[in-house]
Length: 117
Image (tube, helix red, strand yellow):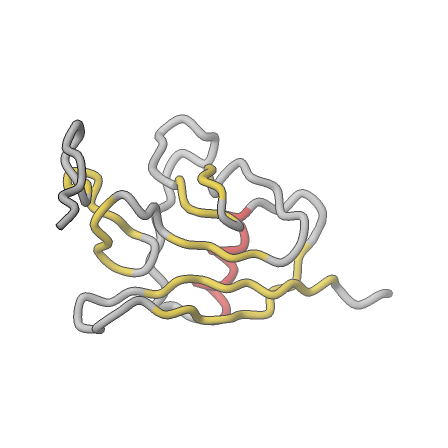
């Protein structure tokens, strides 16, 4: 029997009490067919139960699990794992904790341009 493939996963962690977000790294064994959601669930269940992330429909319909995956926005539930990962919350919304965001509070209201001083 061969050893399972292990990938490095960097997850952006955020706490309202912290001055700034930070990254935490995990080594996660993967199997063929795993999604990014499977990775987050593995981390939560086996490595760090303090990790906050959204999970619901698991079929890409509810739009709740979209996160930054290696710099691209995609659904954690339907994105297959192909190697090492960097996972971040969506940058255009106010973070609540770790990968959770407040979808009712965009960082800049729609249609408003940033003020440049």
